[in-house]
Image (cartoon, helix red, strand yellow):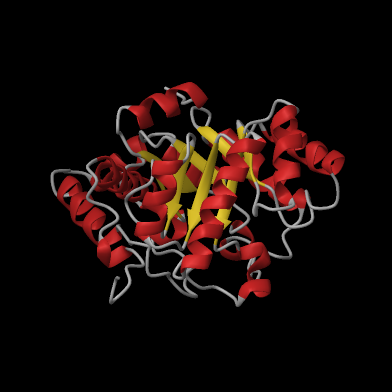
Length: 297
């Protein structure tokens, strides 16, 4: 069953963590469509893992639409969030609405995500008032990381912690239905989740949010350049399960031709299901995959 805003909120109210993964192409989207994953983000991180850029800054609106259309074709039954790339929403409310509307009308998105608070709350409000659901994104915001010291944990100081809470509350007031907290200490994300009245999602923000997000290419070990501390690769355990399945098959060639459950597609489904099960059971993320201060106060 495809999720919607009400069903996502209902799950969170029942205390069931929401599961969210990125995706950027038809084949992997088709694999995700065979799982119980709650949401898909077509992130501008696709510029790095699929298009080969060094960071997310060069990604264009046209590239994002191309990736998102492919994901929608493969994941027909999933709630899809389109990630608004740098330069697609900052200039004006009208341009922000126009580009958000393209995600919905041309690519079939159910919602959009954009980075930042402060001045960007006006853009959130404008898009939300146009009838498009919006998720905010605070903490480490890759599109503007150069302005606050590069890729680093945000929220270690009292000042940053207070600012994050203020930003989350301002996004809520602007009409966002949720916020993504990236690279934020678990203690801070817990405080924010307890203080706001909308959905919180974490990527590298510990277990105290309503939902978890990972980059699919990190989960599958597909991105060779680096892997952040909070990302878990599920392939070793998934491979054991696939090998056990295939050991029961008499004719692997016939099995592969008839079912296509002998390769990367099936391995992806298994790995994603393991991720879903761990998030739902609240066994991921552990401290090993969180930014926990070594000497907490």
